[in-house]
Picture 1 (cartoon, helix red, strand yellow):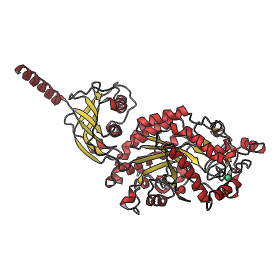
Picture 2 (cartoon, rainbow, N blue to C red):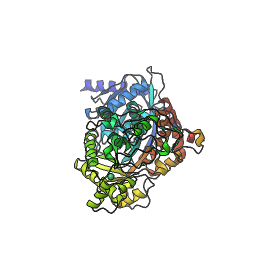
Picture 3 (cartoon, helix red, strand yellow):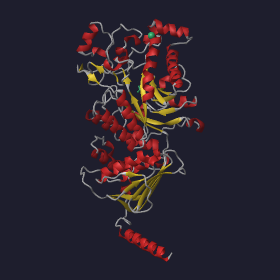
Picture 4 (cartoon, helix red, strand yellow):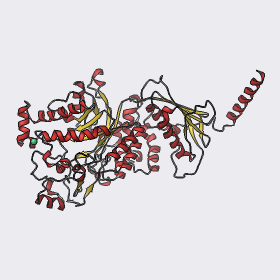
Length: 567
Ligand code: ACM
Ligand code: ZN
């Protein structure tokens, strides 16, 4: 007994000496050490810093291996030491970072992060919560230097309790107007994860390009993924560049990206547009049009030489080369259209674990349907009142098909016209009216009004000194000021508002650099809108935190719009 006591005294002494010798035990930190965006629900800053060096252990259960490996790799990059995740659970010791699941945490995506000079613990109710704790820890690390040598880095002591305000925290990227390579999509996903955004809405099909391989319909990518030219300048353009342009993702590419996103707790929601914005599919399979022999119109005759030649021969349908709303849409009368879309969706469904498939539904002019005998017959046979009800029939029929396959649909707010499909979620983009109406009808809603969420709009009124954009004016202050919960809704109705989403439409955004410029820092602001408690919102405080964040982005090689921090 005595012998044991003596040993334990020696250990206590060694431990205390060790602690006293730790030069970081009582380091005083300042507010600037704790610049985290989105702002956590609760943050208590304390004294001391945790030292990351070659002895640091990252440990936790096997069930958190995905998160642990992510953290070990993040710390290895920051420190230059090759750290690994181990699932032994060593108690104590001054070099241990522990991940754990904790049932007592009140929110599925919530986490608790405790950093002390002698240890770090990240707890979450689920692996997602733990992942968000890791993302917060990432923002407490020094901004990466390009120096890759090993170094000692320290993390300020803190106690954080955090959880999101909204369940749906989305970003949409249009890869159809302009195509973006797999590597860039992964970087975009990383950027989202860094800000705890959790839904990647991937706009994959458009008039100007079909971007997802469908084996049953190979022409969708052989023909539909390429256009013969693109207008120059703002719509209607000054000329056509006459450059063949395009690209697509193979099903293997899609699987790789979905797996990448999943490991970062981001759900990928594919959008397969119908019944409008479908000219790339029509160019591939002209029977999908009400009028397969009518040439595709390019507004103001801004057509490429190659397409003009095709149209003077026997190829009237081409992949669209200008922007805007097109009148040649899927025929809602022919059975072939539904067979085609079901066949395409049969291949889309297994690629995406998400419960949702976005079916578009926006901007579908009805004039082709008005003069199409097949569409008019469908209206008559189904006892529909008009073309709006025909669109509703189209969407309901696709919804039924997808529901039977275990998927739910999301559609832009036009799907309200002619009557909502029974289980549809509405994305409110033309203001908030559609969202309010859908919530009042008991449907889930995602808010993405042009006024606050369209990141293709200009960020400055000095448009001449900005990259060409679609129009509008949406500075980061306005994004930050957004309140997604419409005041018109009762408490019961508010539960249908799942969250909000920023949209990056890419008619005028044709390089990764430009996507970054248009997204940053507007996405940074939106992340706080959807994550942080409403009461925590404070523009001046956000702006203070934005400066180092911009520095962080720039160190990562990204171009950022800096209007807000120039003031
Ligand atoms: C949209 O911006 N047409 C949804
Ligand atoms: Zn038709």
